[in-house]
Image 1 (tube, rainbow, N blue to C red):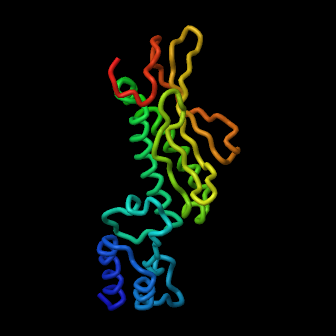
Image 2 (image 1 turned 120 degrees about the vertical axis):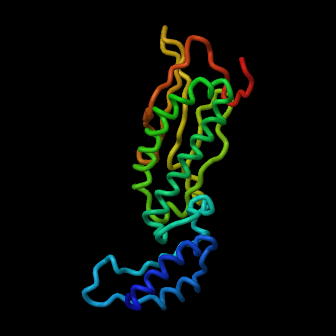
Image 3 (image 1 turned 30 degrees about the horizontal axis):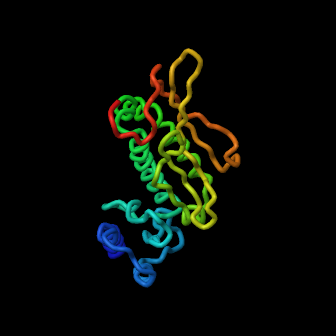
Length: 217
């Protein structure tokens, strides 16, 4: 095994250690300076393994970075995907919070099977439209609306306050069909004008409890 291979292996192994703390700019520059330089004829697979990650770029930084990784995180690709995973996890938790005990017990299974996969898909499609600057300023609301409000969560630009994505649930009552929960989203791509349905979950003929109701009926 030549010196270059030994150095490359050492850099990869060190990634596990680097995830235990946030690398400073000076540290990253120092490691990059010591890394072998690409020579003529080398392929793209021989690019430097070091990518700088700035903890101030993410409100959710501590939740986004994995505890272990075999490669460094490039903010343009991997972090966006990891952040989307985190948003999905938070979406489920906030939905259960909004539903309350009674509604959760009845619709948690169809919600997980029907709504969550659809939400995951549209969130990833939305993520593809966001620039590096957009990701640096993204925040997620943490309190779903109670009572009869529709809001589950919003994703918005921290600097401008502009909503990027809104995930809502509406209580519908079609004639002679009982109550239905309509899960839908609004997106900045059409100025939030359109109502994009992800799916519907039937409740029954009896009026459901208000959102955030933790008591049994």
